[in-house]
Image (cartoon, rainbow, N blue to C red; front, side, top):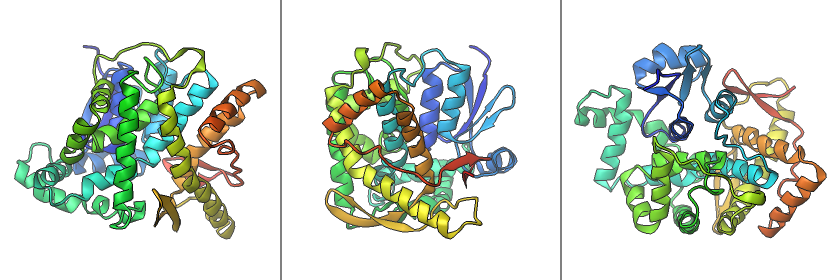
Length: 370
C-alpha cells in the first residue's frame, strides 16, 4: 500500500467527515484516518485551524484544511484524474446545486433522524457510543455511552435552530421519504447522480445519506426497507474499489433527477433567497463587523405546507455564491441551455439572485468580502 499522502482527522459518524472520506476513497488518494478525540482537538485541530470543527486534512507537505468543500477543491488540483466537477454547464451546475442541497438542507432530516428517537434504545445507544469516541476509541462501550450523553448536548439541542420541532417533524419525514423514493428510482438506472462517474453532487449527498441516515440504526433500517438502491449507492460511494465510468453524454440530466431538482428549488431556494436578504440587512446594520457569526437570527420557512422558524446561517450564502458564480461565468449558449433546464423544473428565475455583500472564507472563518 502506498504511504499516506493525506491525514484525515474525522469521526466515523460525522456528517462532513463522511463526505471527505468518500472523496478520498473515490480518488484513491492514500490517506490515514485519525479519530478526533478531545486530546486530538486540543493538541492539533484547534491549534492548527483555530476552530473546533472536523473534518480536517493535513497533507504530507503540511497543508492543513478544515472545510470539506475547500478540501475537495484543493485536492482536485493535486489529483485531477477522475475529476468530480463535470466540464459541461448543465451537469456542473446541477452537481453543485446538489452539493449545496446535501450540505445545507439534508442536515434537517439528518439531525432529526439522529436525535428525535431517544425512545429507540438500540439506535440512541449507538449514537451516544459514537460520540463517546471523543473520550477515547479504546474506552468500554458503556463508558463511551455515558461520555456521549455529555458530548452530544450541543448537537441534540440544535434541532430547533434547524427548524425541527414537533410541529414540523411530520413534514420533515414526508419530504425525506419522498427524496428516498426519488433517489431509489434514479439509482435503479444509474450508478451515480450523473451517470457512471461520481460528481461533487454525489459527495454532497453522501454526507447526510451515509453518516447520519445510512449509518445510524433507525434511519438505516428505513433506507434499507424503503430505498434499497439508495443503500447500494451509499455502499458504492464508500467503496475502496470505486467504479470509474463517464458522465452521461451531451450534458444530459437524467429524467429521474428532475423531481429532486424541483424539490430543491421549491423547498430550499426560498430559504436561500431570504438568507441573502437577511444577511444583506445585517451587514448594512453592522458595518464595523467584518467577521460573521455562525447565526444572525431566525426566519420563517415552509416545508410541505408547514411553516416553522429556523436559524439564518451566513455560511449558506458562501455555498450559494459558488453556484451563482458558475452560472454567471457561462457564455450565452451555455446559459440558454441551463435556463431551459431550470424552466423544466419550474425555476426559470431561481439563479437571478443579486448579492450586494459577498462573503468569503478566510482562516476558517466567514468574513464580509471588501
